[in-house]
View (cartoon, rainbow, N blue to C red):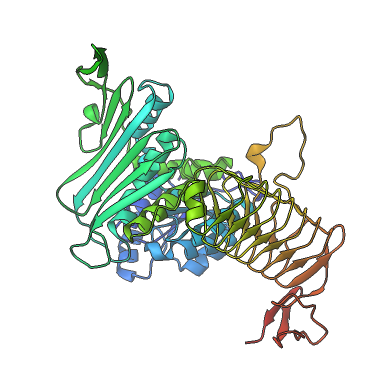
Length: 533
């Protein structure tokens, strides 16, 4: 038994690192094997009794229902290898139960599911890790080192092939099944998100599920990349080629360890104003052999013990999902969704000429952006939003559809606004609890989630690390220092609940009936009400 201990700010007692694996199928069985070999397997969980029985017997682990896993305080982590459509729900429930979560790719099937997961994990101080396996491969680890130390010079072009005959899926297309690994590696090497994504696909076995896709990515720094994936290919190939202005590298996982990573010191010389390629012999790069999945599982255990941020944490998973979503839009015939300011205007997005919109970002149709607004990179703003004068949003912020942000509001990294949120003039979101000008605390940012329909009054302050519930109403000048229940009317410093508000923003009387809409509510627990449907 592994004698490593969990060390977590929210866990007072120490105990062995214990992980339950949820899903014992095609890939889950490999997670079970690795966590068992690392001495960390607590239980297996799968509705397929035969699959669970076989692994439980082989690795001497109990079969436990998911609800029991969530209740068991001796299980610190959950590894999820269920069908992709279940990833977000299972991960959410596990984090809410206080578990650290490892979830196989993709983190979720939509950004709307994934973004709240990241905020929840940050708020509860739980490690959320996504199974982007190739980031833990010794070959890719060494390739990343070559890129970062400048051995290849300035990056120019990257391409990847991930090809095989099967495994054909029906819950996701080839893009979502194969490409996450390659996109994760490419984004890691480039160090930023693409400014433009286009994709083409072939549909041969099913009219709406792509079997073959080619995705092209263009980055703000001039780098370009493409990803070719197929499950209708006569042989297996997993190859990543990286082109720099001083050298080239090929990471081919189909080769033996001695040749998995090759460095080509080719160069281009100019003779009489003509480029002439100068070829050189490939140099094999020595690697420390190791099973990537074992290294990945060990990394998850280490992060659980130390509180370190996983290499492929939820935010890294979000970046990959954003690229996948853009490629999916392109496959469906939609225009590229990371447009320039000029392109945004052509898509019925109103941006005042004094506003600055950094790239890449996404802004939904019908949104109006007024004087002196600054939208920072990797920010997503939904449809039909209004951003008043002197508003700043980003970087890495998500604003849902139909939000109204009044003048002089700054929404920093870590803040997520769901649909229909109102932010009054000069309201404030903090991102650290104890700022000092002389102390750098960017690694201590805490997430804030404002749920659907909530309103925040003028000059109110929302201290970071808390959730504002659906349709809550924060009074002008209030200072929120704790989570706010749905429909709560909050006022004061610090803010306290002084009543309830309806969906329509009307204060509810003792009978909890909305005077505007007639909607009726009932109290279901202290500080909790719900609508009577």
